[in-house]
Length: 513
Length: 118
Image 1 (cartoon, rainbow over the protein chains, first blue to last red):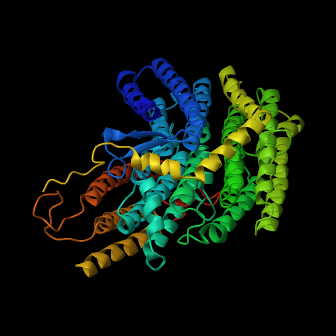
Image 2 (image 1 turned 90 degrees about the vertical axis):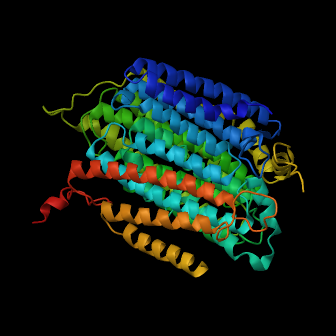
Image 3 (image 1 turned 180 degrees about the vertical axis):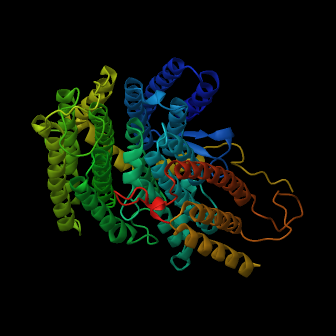
């Protein structure tokens, strides 16, 4: 049993209190430790992803307790890929936060960021549903702090909404866990997969309720209509680097849906029949449409980006809800793309904010550093709207291809293509108002004291954009890898046997009577 | 006992939901507290209801209380308690800052709705 798999959880968990306790008043030391921690995290995550890439399933039994009794961490291809994506995203978010000085506008940014990373990593790696709840809470608690970082009335008000909505989500999660435990007597995912399949068809009332409740909880996290209302205000009001990091949080919901509904409630299971194609898919299609209409309707750039995140999550969920190997493979490719593109756009909107003072989509005088910012926005918008040549286009092709021949194919094709057009118009309008109309506005005397964003900010955004380019250039191998991930997800027997058959404490109960 | 526990959970959930659907911070927080009480009792019930049974395995005992839900409830209590404290602080900050304790977005141009009232 290798201990490496727990490092992505333990490392931030140790760094965060260290930063709070030892480096409280020294922003330089905080930055150094935070950056060093994230770099180590990337190295570790890359190592884990490499180790899992041949199909190995890594198991870590906490306290050496055997699986259904103790908590396990499991690293397979999917979770290690998500861990690596989180770590890489965190690096650029951190670079931007340091470059733009966001981390110095309030206290404890770096500590909260590390706690947030700990929660996200743990949610990706855990093999136990209750532990998933705990890691959700860890990442949420940290995100509450990050969300209201640097304060301000609008941000606090959006923070109240965000916290309240997520508290209700957590309560719902507990109800779901309670009913699952009452029905099956276990919360270990692999054990659940075995036991749910054993429930006879006439005793499925409780587990059906639990499956729907659980889907609702993950849909809140993934911001699927009609559970998306928390997202636009919170993401728009959160500090830009935090909003960029939150781009991975909606994907935690998507990950949980993929994990739970391929392993515990697989698509061919009688209990959850109709849940995906009858309910999840139309909801995902509506969120795709609403998100992209929101892009067109938004009057501020940050809300525009927030709605584009809802739209891209809709796209991801449309593909996931097909629950075919090609669908999951396409969804995973698109998840990587939309995380990077969403994060880049949030950072770019902050470049605009620091250049002109606000984000209203109205013609104003030219901002500082307008040429480079405009170019970055152009690339980011192309990526998010799904135009060639970037990976959004390839991702959409994969989505359309995966939907080919399914029942709702006409709807999926029409909505995906129409929403792409709408989002192109929305982004084009925003870009032209922000960058082109600026030249027709006479500078007034009360012009905002614009300052050019720091070079490091551009490095961070450029890094994300170049990752998107790499995601496009290496689309073939990348999609090949997501296909192997999907194959592994649809053949969960090795996962289940690894978790349940590895011996540990209590694995062979002694009968001493 | 089943009837008592079930109706207690149901009434608390109903009351909690009603309060959560209010528009002001204070009732919403109260509602969430009620919901967390309800879910805590619900978690207890998920391990089957027993009275006076030992949670630890021993010889010559046939009736056991399931110890796992108790551990789960403990975790849930700690988390919900902490979260309620956090949301009270953030809500208080938002109220003191903007003199308005609505939890929904106010229409633009009406930022100071609370001050309009006599």
